[in-house]
Length: 211
Image (cartoon, rainbow, N blue to C red; front, side):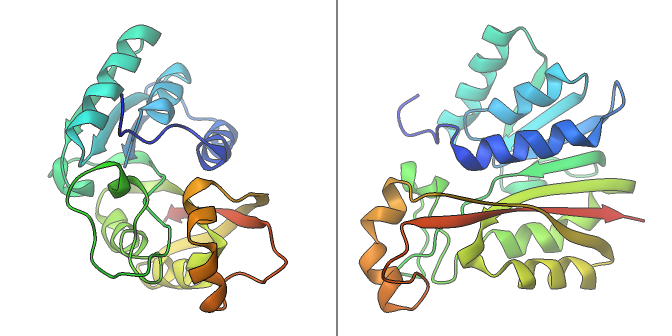
């Protein structure tokens, strides 16, 4: 639907990481910041029992419609990250959160920009996911999360490690800047986040396991 984040390179990277996990049939998966529901539907196709969460009503509706078209069972619910499903635990959590650094720290409360705006350092949601995910992962459960290399992957690893998870960067790829990043390249270069000659950004997949 209009205003819902369409799958891009980051979604494909996360899908490949999920495929490599080799989920057992019936594994329970939570897709946080589901957007179009593409990853939730993919997890269901792999045999998982899937719950999907997004703060956007349009995203939740789009996820339900896409699951219906794909003939896959996905439970989609509107809510704020893991708080949307209190008391639940999962074998895997997948997350493609908003992560684009922004000139303003204020986060949008409505509209399509909620899918990418993430404060000055791009970590407004990444940090919240890192802090909340240990409470919803089962023993040996796994978090798979993608974000830009501009958002300090080392801090993500450190934060997850402090929360008791074993965290690594499982993938790094360089992709052309998307439309939002191109729009604010001047500001990103002024801050020293992007080199003047750089025309690509690095995406990283973080894998964190609970023992």
